[in-house]
Amino acid sequence: MADHAKYSPSQLSRIIKCPGSVKLCTDIPSTTSRYAEEGTLLHKVMENTLNTRILVDPALDAHLAKEAEKHKLNKEQTRACEEALQYFKEVWAEARLEGIVSSRLEMKASLAYLNIPECYGTADVVIKTYDSLHIMDWKFGQGIEVSPKDNPQFMAYALGSVSSLKELTDYKHIHMHVVQPRLNNMYCVTHDSADALLCWCEETLRPALQAAETTAPCNPGEEQCRWCNAKQDCLARYEYAKQIASEVWAMHARKSTVKDEDLAALLEDAKFLKVYIADLEKLALERALDGRALPGYKVVHGRTSRSWADEEAAREYLLARDDVDFEDLFEQKFVTPPKAEKLFKGAKKDETLQALIHKTVGKPTLAKDSDPRKEYAPSAVNAFEKYADNSFVKHVKARRAQ
Ligand code: SF4
Image 1: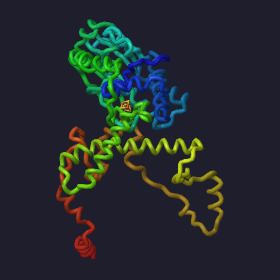
Image 2: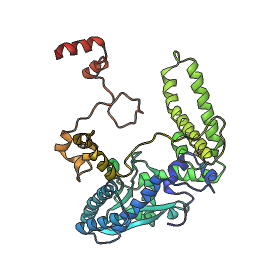
Image 3: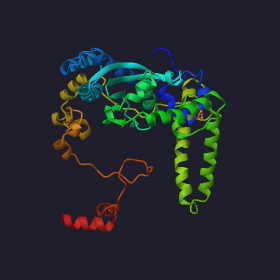
């Protein structure tokens, strides 16, 4: 889609948290990254594959293989697209049982019929059956796991994929599918009526967009500021970082007396400060690379890695030497579990393979209450491990070994 919406669904999460960011971001060109470019490429491959309209399984697989070759995808990228396609086929098969009324790829989802004309975007796949609306979004990122639950982007796509309120309220089920194959994160969240979506539209989205049209103040926070185009020059973000920094220092001065609840509250803010500092370092490097002088600093090469410039020539040279043993030149290592899981389809669900994988217990780490991982429980083993460096334990181990 060539034009850019003032309220793009992909930006709604930030806009709802900080309506003031809309004005600040106007006229700031968006930047791209190699991850974003790779995501665009993989979206294109999926679109071209499904656009063949030959919705027969083997034909789709063959088209994907052709597209992958045409766009020079590597094995891992191809595997990610294959897994996304597999998920699509499963949803498509279910939809066929329900009776497909229409299906669209790269559909313009617009909230114009709800009188929010400037909120629109492109939904990757929209399948409509007699009873259900399916919205599917490809996510090829590997960093943050995306959830369709309470996700403004998915909710806007669902609201915008119909042409009228009647059509929306006629659906018995609204399924929002996230397809993030690289994190094995592919599932859907279902609403059994449009009520929750419409409530969100009236109680959250519309007031936020109305605030954005006025002189709404900026509201800094870790999530909304992280991807905001205005963050480098945002005064509100700067003031917030300054306030947190002073609280951190105040706490530092009275570490032993600080209350647990104050410490917990500050942990959240400290994340904001870390990102703020990382952004400052990035800015300084960009300036230095532009040739600007940063007093006391210079640009150097970071950690380097070494590889053969010409492996064949290196092999020949080393094989010809009398002082190098042939056996020392070649190594054969068995693949690691993550690599093995990429060797064949469905490896992550293969019970035999999974039973052969030993997973170590991670170090205790602080996480938010909402984190889906199980809470840490120190076991007898852990308690023993804690003393693994203890000289008495070493002594007992040594005695046993004798
Ligand atoms: S940097 Fe943060 S506070 Fe400033 S406009 Fe963007 S989201 Fe709002």
